[in-house]
Length: 386
Image (cartoon, rainbow, N blue to C red):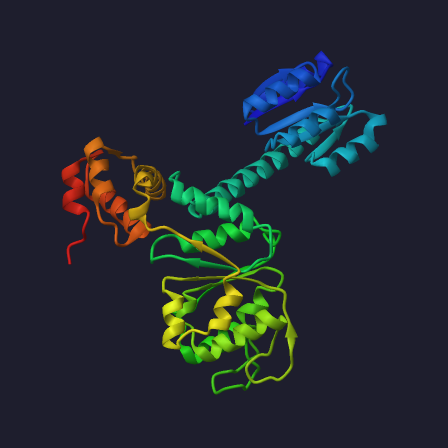
């Protein structure tokens, strides 16, 4: 483990160094707060021992600045008899622990063991969060996708309902997720419903819930997606495939913020932000009588059109390299490189399946090709053999 000791007393620094090095830890020393802060921000330490009383920058100020910088190291404060109240306040500010002078060997080692385990857990959680959020990242710098990102930034902090339009595979669900994560409801539930994947006879039960005995298979009470998303965001994907009966009930919830479960006449109040998406032309669906015009106007307070990949070809190199790194990390394999002519070939493909198709092709190329992917590789493997 990498350990930093910040203390203005040389004897304490050296004693702790000897103890920790005997336990096979790598130890660095700092004689004051400023030197310690600089070392902490540049050293990627697992744990930091920091004295509270020091001339110039004291330990509490070091702790504050480490917190401001987002330092993930576990900080253990060293306190004298008169510093106990201050040490407790440091715990409230984010310090992991404090040990009291005169220092006790066992106390130091136990505190360090607990602190390093805590740091390891924090780093693991941070890595997982980065992976999860990274997989939801909207990648690209073309004018078309930058416009979408600007719309998200403007609309997300509001409670306005959003209708996301775009072909299959363009990333509509990423836009919906970004709207939620940048909203004031980000800490509340985010519930997704694929309206096309649920049979029409079950869609009302899924959305609004049901009471026990409402129908043959209703063996217990069930909360619907609207209730599950209360205070948060409900994403209705492929809403153009929703039945007219379910559309009427959704309209009522949007108008009155109330719903009733299947088999009940009791009203339940919900506070939900609804984001919808479709790959269909809803104006055509309205003309055909398969989609309610009044529901369309309720949903389409803000409309975001996600461009197909054919309209943002300058993003293909960025996306291809992004998927290359992501997939190779997932599979634990060496990252391949694209030859310049291979990238030009990728840019010339029709991309009827949009970004989803591009990711699949990159994965196929990783599996079937060598370290450097050529134009011929792209030509040979861009289309799956049927």
